[in-house]
Length: 292
Image 1 (tube, rainbow, N blue to C red):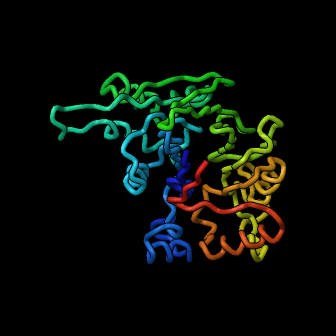
Image 2: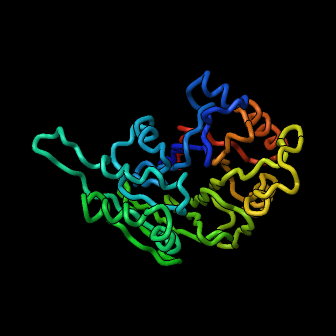
């Protein structure tokens, strides 16, 4: 199985329209990863599983050469993770085929609270019902906490995916198991999370950066101590503490917000510091692939 980071930005992508940060300036100049960061998304090649659909998903699929989504799991209802859900309508139709054909519908899995929230926010449930009952391009599955799904892949094996609630219980992470390997993926919202024993020691952890309260190189304060976001979002320092407790063999950081002006050069230097401390912590970029 190959894990591909389709997008490693957050609620704000890089470049951000109108932004004068160095990160956005470089992204406009270079126009490619690692300078450009689209909205959050992860794809598992083999089982062809997508996690979350940012508004950039169509561009991400074209860039990654993805022609079909077998299954999709949603971590939570926030628009930077769901706004591109209409992708399924175009994903399986080929109007130019002779005879006209449609690929099998995509299985869309909603963890328990995500299913509840989808009925209350952004008309997500209504959109999914249109895609399921109106144009028949998805099959929606509501999960209960503790449920797992075994998704077959093209190598005649399967990938087991188990959602788990984070501390903010409207958002889920995923335990992904395949070929004797365990991957812990939390797309966003680590605030207050304590990794439980059953998740510790994975082969790979994929976690959001959180808020860069301090610059990781200079330790210069970026956010004031009383900034309201610090009351509801994990800081990068707190993320590093969670990484230590989780104890993954390797950790990849994603969901990197443009506003903190983290250029690829700065992140590379931070990686060097982690390596010098014996920590296998790196920053993901759009298009990065990991073979599992």
